[in-house]
Image 1 (cartoon, helix red, strand yellow):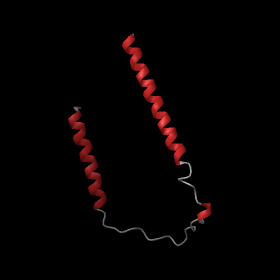
Image 2 (cartoon, rainbow, N blue to C red):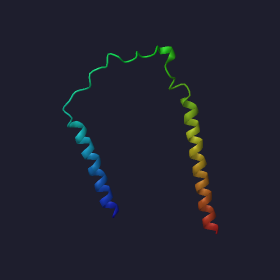
Image 3 (spheres, one colour):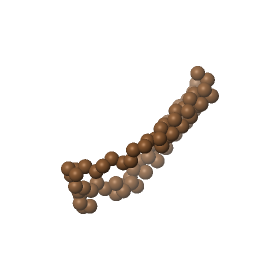
Image 4 (cartoon, rainbow, N blue to C red):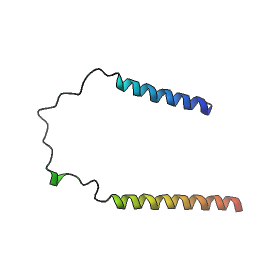
Length: 79
């Protein structure tokens, strides 16, 4: 398929899904009275504690991929 047709089809699918989600006529579900209570704040999972480590790991991985890609391109030019 031509790239233009693929883009048009993808756009149509995304628009259809968006309209379908707005067309729902029912409200939110009723709460379950038998559900377990939420844990206290002390027992909740820490999300933001090690975010800096995750960002540094992402940057290092990106630098690694960029370096290996440029080395691969340089080897192809010399060969």
